[in-house]
Length: 324
Image (cartoon, rainbow, N blue to C red; front, side):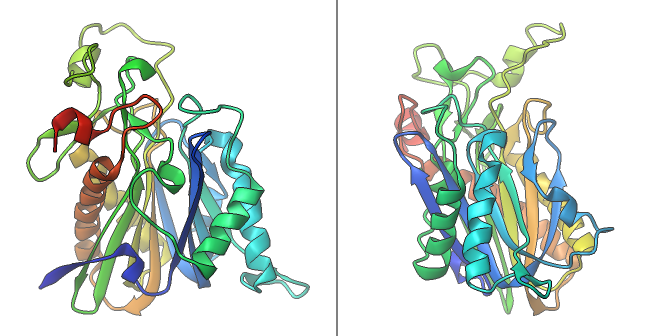
């Protein structure tokens, strides 16, 4: 029988965050001291990522030591340098004789149009987030970490989009633990996967209700060369079940079904939708079951990201629009 747990209850990980509230950007870092198995599936057309080649099943690395979810688009990818610096000082990484090299992968959202475009996550922020993860874990859903500058419903630009954030959800079935963290920053609209109700997305011009993104797109079949590209939803599935890198890549792919249930349209050329799948333990569990459950917990994490966000930077949250 399943029961809900906190994402921070999953064994073998440490999660830390930092954000620059004025600039509307931040970082969320997931760390495993011993290393965690990792896979990745990218289905959006415009990802911003670092060292994603490490997660190709054909490459040699069996584990990574940190996954960074960040803001700043490609400009923010340097934040991993600070994470690496902190981990190296702690003796965490792949032993190469003269030192230990932390293996760190990263994916970023585009949040440059929300706050100060000239302030992006940097190595100092990366170091701080890693230190928080290991010394004073501070993960929270909402306008925190990589979710600080997240918004959705941007097909018509920033004037009629909504504030979202970072969200999480996790379950336990006997010894098996599965959880999701997601930064919701899509071109498309967001739906409650359980009810089909729209909960965030493209607003009417008076910002009192919703318009439908797909219906708006259907207004013209002409090719749009300069589609609004300030998007990307990124996330991670974390489980204490033991899987190989190729199995984790498959689980990450199955988890995209959770994106598809909750976001419409999704996986567009104007998004960089990316999901990591992380294995932190040695529980023996069926891969297809874990992949199926992963899609569910990801969908629920998306809902939590929407409802935990607060209105900010002139963008209303779902609680303000729907009154929930």
